[in-house]
Length: 268
Image (cartoon, rainbow, N blue to C red; front, side, top):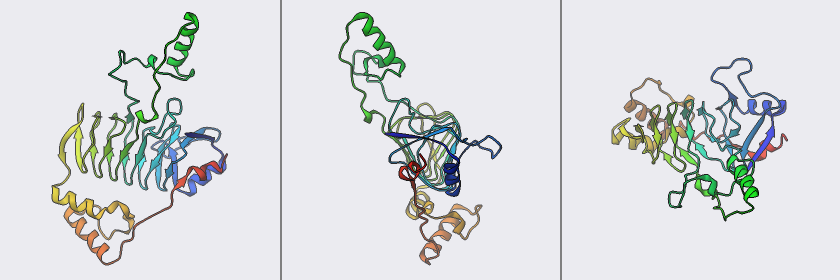
């Protein structure tokens, strides 16, 4: 289920203290969520510090440290009571990224959503309700399964370009990149660069040996501010430096605690 709470000054202070921002891309006046507006979140949501959600989105969703989304993802409270995306650490989500709604059943005599039992606040539900009153007749409608829209799982260090569409239930591997305008209908392998309609693998960011080493060290489990290196180091140099720090006990996993629905509901 989704919870809905009104934004108070105390809640804004709490989010700020935990370095969770809900704003447009620029820190300007009136660019962030305002007192009196509403936010929604799943009962199982886990928010982490140093993340940024797009202002204008009603729903918060799982997102790891140092990630941001310029798209309003998360479950649409008017259509779903489930969180529909989970994002890892160090991810960059551009604007106008969308997740498909539930699939239409191709095996029934019609793909129309009028054949599904819909609540009356949905347009299909309202129209069917009015029509059955006019005809004094109805048929048994199909039930929408909550499992028809499983969440999209986005790994760590993933970059998704603008105007991308994602099929529910897919998994996007660590280090993957998705080109602008792509329609992603299948799982994306780690460190793959995909694009097109439907999206296909164009290339991989690095050769297999490098990819395997990156997946082994899982550098995203650490705070990059603890790295003894330059952001401009070649990938081979980066790997050797990180491995050296880990082997010498000079890097520890960064495990900030999540903000859950229990914390947020204290501000009702």
